[in-house]
Image (cartoon, rainbow, N blue to C red; front, side):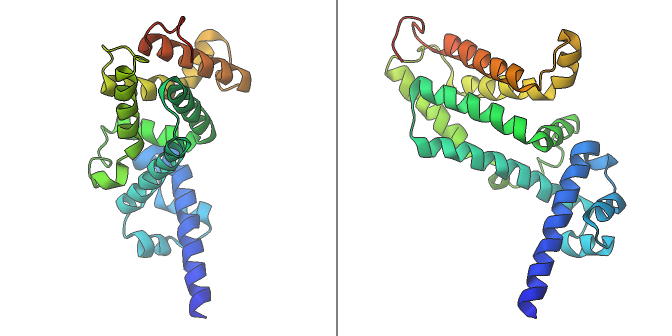
Length: 214
């Protein structure tokens, strides 16, 4: 019986977190309501307070989960051991695919930015650190030494640009779709945007990009 209760407890926690993620992504921290989360999770709201104490802790757990999802996706890049131009291609491709498949991640980060990272700043650094970022910076430094990347490239600025240029395709997808009368979330359009992003980042980062072999 104890094992069954434990399994039911874990399922309840996961149901709450799934519902909370949807509500926070749609309405932000201040717009989401515990009553609505409880209704969507099909659970008594008293259980939400039992598991997470308050709305702030529930939100932080959701924030942790979406960041961990990105960290896991990034960590797969480390496993491939690719370097140089191929690393940049893979990173951009991974970001595009992840952001396409995880709209809640995009929305929650947009809400958190509107709130000046209020709750992200309260979380321990270990909860939001992404080791892959240091790996990419180091590989860019190695690429500079090997003559693949321009000596003038600032590793940190390059990584920030990689993240920003990918994310903006999704954070601005609705307004840009209206502006250009094209659906930016369309599969073919995303593939074009992905390749264009790869091209402009390599053109910016690489030494004699058009002449040197891959």
